[in-house]
Image (cartoon, rainbow, N blue to C red; front, side):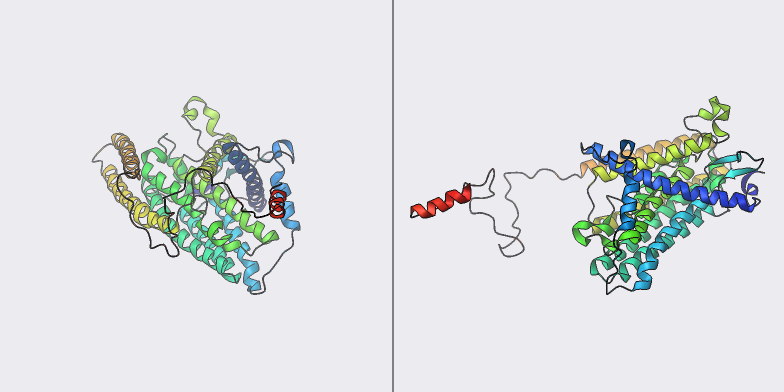
Length: 435
């Protein structure tokens, strides 16, 4: 059986086995990714990171999970208790369900049996749209969690999250349209098969890939796009009032969503479970058996490292800048690329031009666009002010702009303190306080 015909005929025990394995893999990946993030950020900041619980601190995430489970579960008085409890569940369940259509590998034989089945729970003609639809349900959990807490900070975090996810899902969806056009299908397994010729869509459709990567970071509320949880403004955002296991569910949903968008990026743009660097042409068994699962998770961990790298290097954006970037930059670029991809696809179908030169031209165009954007960003960086030009007047000296010192800005160390004393008793008190 090939393509979608390979799905739908598994026995019940095979379906249950796959579902349990997906659940276990995602939970273990969450524990590992938390440890991985803390270790990598610690290395970036010249710290040690977790290293006590287990070898290399690998059991630190498990210890944190046990600690969360044993903490006191607090429900605010003003909270809507039913919605307050259901909201974390609404967040975490879609995070698990979306992995049902992610392919981990080709057809394999289950050990100790004669059963042959794909390394994928199920597939459908609109599998990618299914992922987008199910992932959107998680937004309701965040909004309901913020609203039901009865806190202004939580409500603002929930509203921010809903606006952020909606705006960045538009760009993400447009980035995927060009993939559908070239693959001729929205099925995840067929998209992977369409990249078997070695031309991964990350190269032939680099603008769509870049838009998707930026949008997936914004979609998962991760730094530098973690505006719904901005502790400097909203304490903790939508989960400010949550504790114990309910907070752990929000935490679990965030990390599983990171794995989900990374797995989707791997499937759609990096060839899925196909062996990298043309290894399949050198080694015939590279794309057979359980080896493809290794290639798949290796590519996923590249995106996980990207998430950690961004968190450890970039500062948080201002909210209005973040929304402007999504609506005024990402969406127009994604829309323009979809139109261009549709024209090129039509030219290929009508045999106006050959596919090879078009793919090379698409790569060259993508490199040119990226180089142009880099040049524009560098050229528009703020320059140092001219010291001969007087600074503009910024206020009248009243609140909220304090008046400048009479002699200008004070530089260097503060002036030493001086005490005026008229007697030996006062001087002794000052010396005692100094000691």
